[in-house]
Amino acid sequence: MSDSDAIVRFVGIGKTYDGVTRIVDDLHLDIRRGEFLTLLGPSGSGKTTTLMLLAGFETPTAGEILLEGKPLSRVPPYQRNIGMVFQNYALFPHMTIAENIGFPLSVRGVPAAELSKRVERALDMVQLGGFGQRRPAQLSGGQQQRVAVARALVFEPKLILMDEPLGALDKQLREQMQLEIRQLHHRLGVTMTYVTHDQSEALTMSDRIAVFHRGKIQQLDTPEQMYEHPKNAFVARFIGENNRFGGTLEAVTDGRCTIRIAAGDARIEGTLVEPVRNGGAVTVSLRPERVQVRVAGHTIDGYPGCRMAGLLREVIYLGDHVRARVALTGNEEFMVKRPISEAHTLPHIGAAVEVFWMPEHCRAFAQES
Image 1 (tube, rainbow, N blue to C red):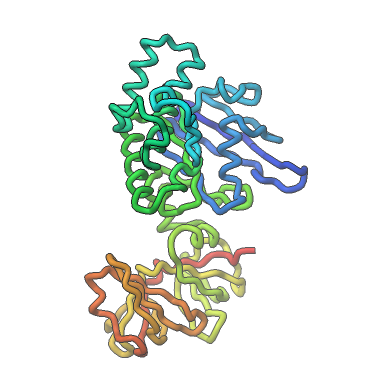
Image 2: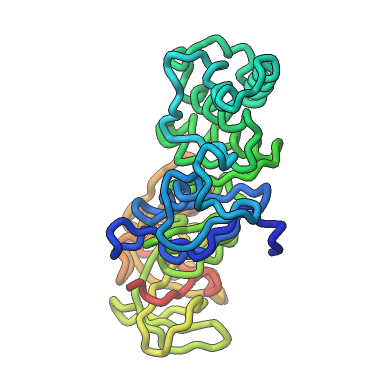
């Protein structure tokens, strides 16, 4: 990627509060102009600190952040031309919606006539035209969230940062707002950087996702690549559902490997993702939707995949799909996920079954330290 493609560059950024524990550790990251980048990770992984460093609310202890090629270390937050949307919206309760949205313009000295026009435009942008004279308490949570977005957009910043802005909303409204923010991004083409710990939210909204763990980016990729081709055991575990086995690597041929499962003496084939020596410990990851299940002895003849025997313990109805819980040697909680249209093909609870899958869908990683 050329320098002109990156609106933001983190160059060797480090952050520590006690001189020992690194909250952000030697971070190198380019944010592309016009993209929707999500910083994803568990609590304490460094994602929010990274966002606060970019906003100017935190100061790095090492490295430099560049915005359009210019260092930000000596630039205060209010001069960075960055819009910010917080989880609690941070709206002024004593101001009208129009006054809240216009506040960034008023502190910049924008004339009243121009301010009014831009506020109206911002209200229309988030589908709140006619709401300008109401106060925040008169709006729903979803409407307040839109006001916060409009306030971040109204002064036409180069970059918008969002810190878990949907965390306080119920599930249905959160999913609706995910799509609305995504559509707004497509319409405006503004660069957005979004922090969340919700992996389904990240998959829904992002052009790219940066997965953080222990202050470092574990993988930076598109949602599809992240889900289908995780680069290590942490990313595989954190993104989506997984069936996991511990085992020992026995052989590798052209990326295809043979693994002896730790519990019992079963051997399966998979795809080796990270370098591991023969005899080394591995973690095996397999998505529930990639697995088939049939009554023992009735699997597909000649199926070239892996198979293991077990007992069907439970079938859980979830509306658009069902999950079957199978007890296997080494994994009592092995899950199979099938669309609701295939629910009738599942064996009855208590049946002896075989689960089977293609080796390319079974991914082996170096065991997490």
